[in-house]
Length: 359
Image (cartoon, rainbow, N blue to C red; front, side, top):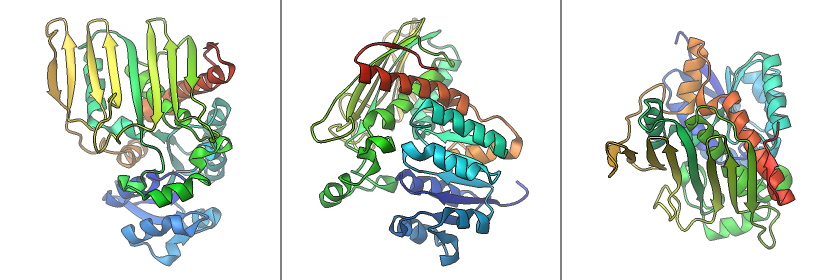
């Protein structure tokens, strides 16, 4: 790169902002020039971690944009406000990296794509699971044809709950969780809360990636209705494809968090092909491959990742610098298929019946 890339982080609703700012801070060609959030206390950790000056800290997002002139904006708002924030930032003509999920509905997703096209910037939707070495390794094996044509993907993922940790997976106290739950956007329907909207997009989008971009025909979803909560904490979606059925299950309330101890069932993916199968579980350092020649299964080490494919900031800046298209789960095109599945799942759960894929 010929010059430093100016990057800011705006809206700290999602705890992944700290992780994404770390990726920016560690990048040799990035200058982290500002952060903004209407609640100053949510920026304290970032200010301390990255040595930000008072002149680089804002509670007014527009002032942040006008005074820092960033090339890339990292956005981490509540799901229900993704369209609002993308449309705000798009008018400045800069690029946007939006933390998952894509949107709270398909109409918002399409509005965001339109806003970015008008502004001239590029949009990427970051799914942290897309950077996990076992899932990247599984995709390579799929692309090499090791299991033939992918016919089905089973997905189970979640954690103990969104309030059990903050950035860098730092565990919170019971007092924090009790106090925050009443006001957290994760538990408010209008803000896009619930395990289905938090985690189904992961499985639907990466499942689409594994299946080469295929879309399902119909969706059947059941979500729980916890007493005293506006949103679900557990959902199961069955997607019917021309090739077969896929299962996507989301869970807040796993026995353990997968980044400390894999719960049972394990979090991750089971990929079934015409000539073999792959199991790829979050945070593990191996994948298991089963083929016609090796029916007993092979335990394979995960691929080593290297720049610019170690994290979303590296990748986004690489695409900006080279002019390459944003591909895979981060691309709006593939994430849109995932959003169609999510929207259809929400409708199915609400109506209590199978629905055709929404478009």
